[in-house]
Length: 351
Image (cartoon, rainbow, N blue to C red; front, top):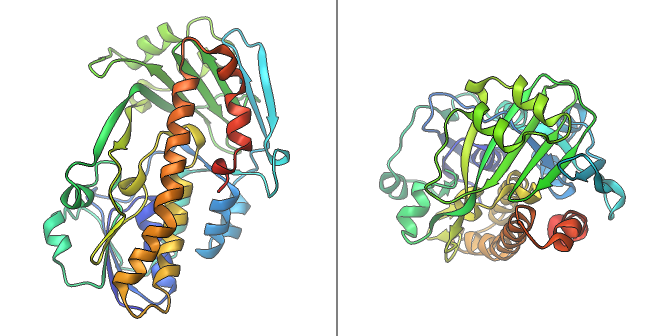
């Protein structure tokens, strides 16, 4: 079937859903609250499953042309000693993951949409959206989704016990991996032709409050191996972003209610530890369009989407949460040493 789809949220999941449905002949309308479509400039790891979704969206070749392969990963101690290294593409079947900035991916998706399909500065009320005259309403409005809250008031983001920072620095480095210390970690993702992308996580109570980012990060990672101090110093204070890491607890009972459906973080927000958040949003979009293709009953098609996506994304969220806790632990050294290699080998990390 084809029809009219209203998509609330102009992030990766929302834009990908619009592209997937537009390619099937749907009239799509994206509503984004922000004054312009933009995403944080953080680097995304695009695993083979997501690359297949990008092919289905018609931008796979464009992504491969500008996204370098992510073939080698190192896990180190704060003093720089190597714990383990992984040749990612050789750990299982299929191609290596690729690395692309979120903003670059969103630009590629936007280019696939017709003029006038995206409405920015559009603060559409969730109850108005749910009652709108459309064949399908897609809730793609992120971890704090108002569409999900209207459908499932009990399903809300829960703080996972850590705060995270991210930024980019014009620093040259060959280090691609993570460094784990007691209760904290630091990761570096160099992107070809881009500043180095980094992130940091700290185990902290929910009421933890910070001073200036630079001051706090200098203290947390003082004495850690190069290039970590250089990355912190080279990142402007105003460009360091801080977030509280959250996950949906309880998860929504279903991803589809009547003609409304949830995709991306609105459906299954997860910690970033497996690098699968954007990947799963892309797969959601392609699966949604495939379920609607040729369907006579949109309600049944959305139920099929729910059956296809709810279980694997919940499994992914659980695995990501477990890895998050292990990677920030103050104890369990053996579990911490093997966690990255196990995560890269598990089917859940590639499904």
